[in-house]
Image (tube, rainbow, N blue to C red):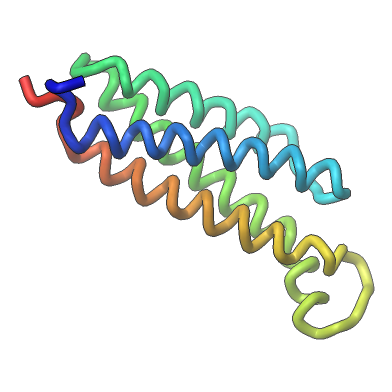
Length: 131
C-alpha cells in the first residue's frame, strides 16, 4: 500500500460509491421506482471497471476508468430523468403519475452518482501507483 498514489485512492472511493449507487438502485426499485434494465447493466459495468482500475498501471486500466465514468454518468442521468415526475410532484404537492415519496431517494441517487462521476474523472487523470 505504500506505493499507491492519490489516483488509486480516488479510484477506490469511486468503486465504493458505485457499489453504494447500486445498493440505492435496489432500494429505489423495491419501493416502486422505475429502473431500466440497461441502468442495471451500466451500474454493474461501472463497478467492474472501477475495480479493474485498482489493479495498477496497465495500458487497459486507463480505458476502464473512462468506461466506468461514462457508465456512472448514464446511470445518473437516466435515473434522474426517469424520476423527474417524482421530484416535480414532490415540489408541487400534487399526485399524478409519479411517486412523490421517492423524490428524496432520487436526490440521494443523483448526489452519490455525481460524487462517483467526479472521483472517477479525477482518477482518470492520475497515476495509480508512485513507482
